[in-house]
Image 1 (cartoon, rainbow, N blue to C red):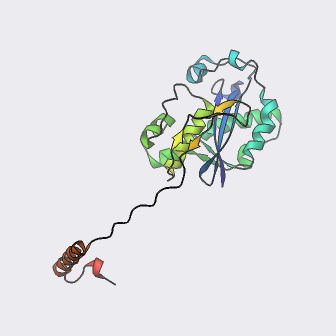
Image 2: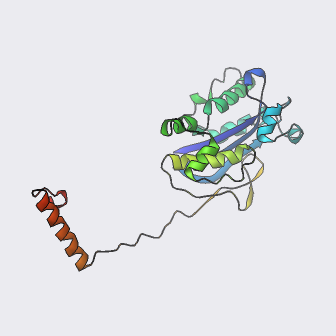
Image 3: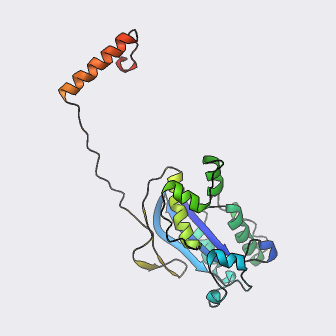
Length: 237
């Protein structure tokens, strides 16, 4: 099963007010394992970034001046996503912005949800941990995920962290390294690849009870059987 863990950064909160996407970050999972493939792209919004949004992600208009507009990267982004299942924290926000951008570019496009199923990890976390904080920082603390590099929000870093949180929250056992060799991302930006510890593990050592321990165990079961009127479940066939 192919999944894409996705995050965006924007100029503000409401696409209906003309706010735009300025960063997209995606990492690929296949059968619950990170493949090392990712997509990352900064985007020129052609409008000013709200002060409140800048305080969250630290991305300025000057930083985006030489970046492509959304129309130039739309096909590349859609090709990377394909029909994979999307994993997003607070999916309504990111899907809302992506749908707005795509429908502005291609009227009648509809919604990404028509081609991709979506897992909202915020809703998943709320169902698993009702009444608790379930933002990404809180989930990192709860599941022991290192987010020490997350002074500001960044789409690719947040997607990497969310991938780790999602795998742990849904039963996966992984280890994440955000450092390592630099490589060119699918979207053309140099970013650190995610690296996982090798999946091969030394088999657990099997320790067999010695004769004395087996005799003590048998005596204990006999005592339980006597006290329970021969109703010891461990002695049943």
